[in-house]
Image 1 (cartoon, rainbow, N blue to C red):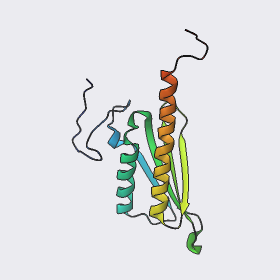
Image 2 (cartoon, rainbow, N blue to C red):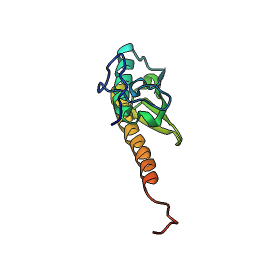
Image 3 (cartoon, one colour):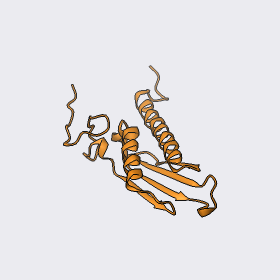
Image 4 (cartoon, rainbow, N blue to C red):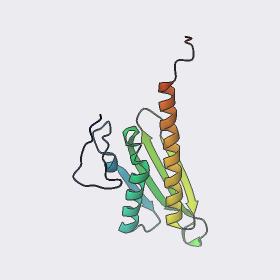
Amino acid sequence: MAQRRKSGSRTGAGRSTATRTGAPAQELPIHIRATGVPVDASDRVYLRSKLAVKLGKFGRAIARASVRIADANGPRGGADKTCTIKVVLIGEPSVVVVEQHTSLKTAMDAAMQRAAYAVGRVVQRRSDSRKSPAAGSMA
């Protein structure tokens, strides 16, 4: 039976899965940068906590994540809030997702959803390739 590491603070689902670097999954390094868009502390907390929950189950495969928020059109309006999420995976190519919307929160939510889906596919593909026998071998 596998042992669980307990962390001092219980965030997200309340469990802590150790990554290869030794950091619990809820403590994934998430860097947030904003350009031309006022992002207050509550938006940053929302983004960090929701991204940690969505990517937490893939914690062993993730080295770090970065989020870039920008206002593409400036004061002109329109679908101009852009949220770019880059997830750097261990031993795999990085996953980059870009979403654009009039609402910053909608752009962030859509980008987080797509990033979690894309990371899940990469992790599943890696898992499937390790389980299947080599193509050239016959039994």
